[in-house]
Amino acid sequence: MTDQCDAKMFSSNNESSAAVVRACKLVLFGFLAGAGTVLFVLSEFTANDVVQENDRQNVHEKSNKLLKLKKAFDVRLDLKATKISASISHPNPDDKFDANATLEDYTRMEPSRPSVKWLKSCAETLANDPTVVTPFAMAQEGWEKYRLGDCLKACTASACNLPKKSKERQKWNRHHNASKFSKMAYMYQVMACEPEPERHNLTVVDQIFDFVKGRPGFEVPDPDSIVIHLRLGDVMETSNKSPVAMLKHGSIPGEHGAYVRGHIKSILSVDDYLGIIDTIHPQNKKVVLVGGSHKPWLYKKSKVYAHCLQRALLRAGQDTELRLNYGTPDQDFYYMSNAKYFVASTGGFSRLIGAMVRHRGGLQWREFDILG
Image (cartoon, rainbow, N blue to C red; front, top):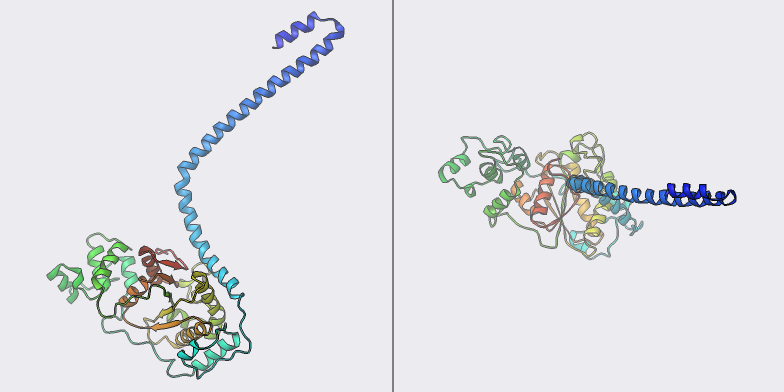
């Protein structure tokens, strides 16, 4: 093309040569621009192919990272949502705590969100009630050092609390049948920890549930119940917060750092729970509060908090049952793991329950990593 332009230019007279030069420049510019566009488009296709290939190679890794971020974000989002929900219904400042009201009386009251004054009066009243502030029931003989969560996590004889020469071990040697054992941890050790440890094997726990189903004390919640696990005992008693402060704002016990997971509350407030309950289902489902302490002498704040929380939820119109030290750890674990709606607390035992709830098709709020 440039040769043709040069030939035309030298064969033309001087007057037309300038016009020819201008025309040739325009043609040449158009040619180069077109070629540049083609190269740009081709480079874009090549770059896109490389990006798509990289995306395909990295999609699994990115998905895993996003899932981990979602879990951490969901916990904070849930707590943020409770604050928004709590602001929708304002408490009645004239509402007063009635020390003489029975639990049945609350079901006949017009629902009202408890005020700060109401919560303070409740905590102060129940703190002086000897029928409420009583030590947790002593663990039954043989359950004092029982740690089901540690057993599934560590998968060792010491964690599962199964001595080599125990009667339980003799049963296994005689029958080779884990269903003959009296405790879930013993069953898990011989089914999942020997000869090679299988930690957090929830399918094995399912099989153990089949063994204990129907035994006395092994109950399941109503299908529509919202089961809430309360972190009572050591975490609450060692906190520098009073029961009133915990009921109002919740608590992150700084002096019990093992349970501070990314500044997540170990203890939730009344408004936190009302918000979560409303998020799970706006209709009035039954709420079951489950808690206990493996250290019976740590009970004062826990008892006041739990009983006031029950009354506060009842006052707000939520049918609420309180199960404190209802049975053995195995019975509590079985009961909560069979919940359709479960609100977890911090701690390995509660996270294990949450994992079982999800494993069995239920829904969990406040989700924590089982390995955390």
